[in-house]
Length: 222
Image (cartoon, rainbow, N blue to C red; front, side, top):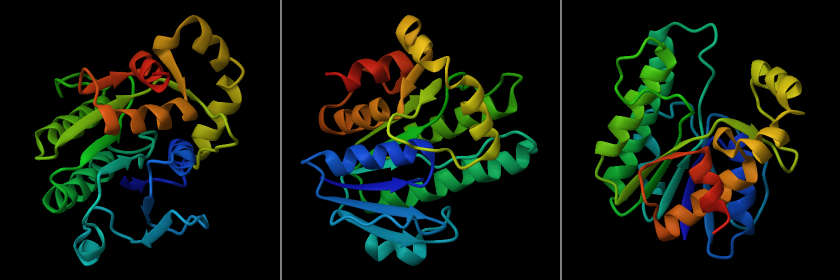
């Protein structure tokens, strides 16, 4: 199985990459990002590309893949809705459109978030933008597309978020996440479970297209 991973330097992406490298069914992992990760492994190939929304310059390197794990994203804090939409919606849909054209048999997995608004009409701007992104991805001609909506995410193997606000949130909420995982698993998951669930879904599918934390946790342990 050959996979493409966006966002390998972020907390979720780091966890997903770890699980891909540990899975014997994964023979190649193509990392695409705006800066080099510095990761070295026989399975890893890397493309540094500034404009993720326009992959046309690197199209010759993007064919023949079975799955894409899109773990790239930014916090909406301090951003206007238009700026957040430009990064979250336009960049994602631009990249996905190229991959759908080149790999119609691909399974595309998008890391969204708990509280995403599928109706695109709610009061919260980030939730509307995420909802619009999900809906557009689900309409694309992939073999299958799945939206992962995790709540709190516990890093399991030293993964670290890039954004300062996320680092602060993890310091504040970190001690609480194991309790949430134990007593309210519908609201939390881990980086390890995210990666394992993604790989399971690519191999076996899932009963629904939008997967919340409880679904992710269940699929990761099958």
